[in-house]
Every structure is written in C-alpha cells, then in structure tokens.
Length: 115
Length: 113
Image (tube, rainbow over all chains, first blue to last red; front, side):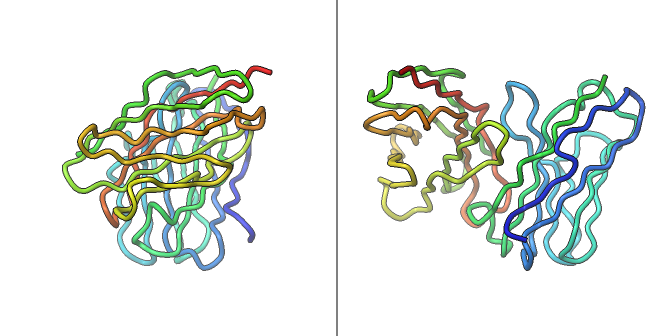
C-alpha cells in the first residue's frame, strides 16, 4: 500500500477483555515497529521485527502484551486482560532496512480506550 | 542509554512570529536526532533529521534545527509561524544505525491569528 495502515482506528473495550490491533506495513518493508503513546507521554518502544529474525521484545511492558508477524507482512499486537493503564494510542511503523529509525514511516495509530 | 527532554509541553506563538521548540538529549553514543510532527488524527511525519553530517539541518515546511554537541541540544525553529503549523512536535534520538527511537514527551504548538 501507499502507507502504513492500522486498524481499527479507534477501539473501546471493557477492562479485562482481550484486544487485537493490526498493522499493514508498506509493501517490501522488512522492519516493523510498535510504539505506545500514552496521554501526555512520549512514544514508548514496544517491539521490533526485522525479517525472519527473532523480534526485539524488550519494550513490552508485561506478559499481557504480545505481537506476531509472519514474514514481511501484517503484524498484530495483542493485549490480554486489558487494564485502564493500557489506554493509549498504539503506533506502528515500518522501514526498508534494519538501519532503521530514520527510515521509518508511521501509521495513524489505533486509539485504545479501556473502560 | 538515551533520553530526550522537551522543554514546554505547550507553546503558543502569534502567526508570523518565530517558532522555537526546545529539545535536549543525552546519549552514550553518537546520536542521530529527529523532529517529528503529528497533526490531529494523523500519523507521525518526519520533519527533519541529523545523522552526523551538517549540524544545521533543514526540513520540510520551512523548519530547521541545529545540532549543538556542547549544549546537547537540537532545538527546532521556524522564522515565521503559519496557522497550519499548529500540531504536536516530538524530538527523538537514536544511536547511529539503531532501529530504536527514544522520544520526548512532545510539545503542542498553538498558533494565534
């Protein structure tokens, strides 16, 4: 596609429910990143995928968070047993190469509200 | 380890006035520095970046930033604010060639007609 696409754009869920957030990277981009942006905070790195290499999960805040990506395609970020502090905008980015950050293009984000 | 501090969560300027958004960083390795802009309901867009070439970096929409190693700063400026500049601006740092960005908390810029 022309850009990084994320869905849904908005999600309201009840505390304790599981949610799945989807990211479609730019075609051909081997690297994919997830960031979280909580109100009044900067973006926090969550996870990084590069091709078929083992992902860097060092930013995931708890074991309730997980992410998958098959090859160089779509990624899903799953949050289990959501809590109110999970409310944030979740941003996905992709880039052509592992050299990275300066080459990344960001999606519009998914705004998650846990009530 | 890296960190970014943006001074002022909210800055207001009059249309036509100078825009100055401050960013200080700390990094244990030579840094790459970035400014991103986020318009309402849109994704982050790269404004400009410093990657160890010229210290004065020009970006889109008339913005520029100067890397000052002695001051560990990378302030964003624009000589004359336009209404369309109203947005949230994020400063970020990464290690050279690293994939991980460390962001500041952001500065919301308001432009008063």
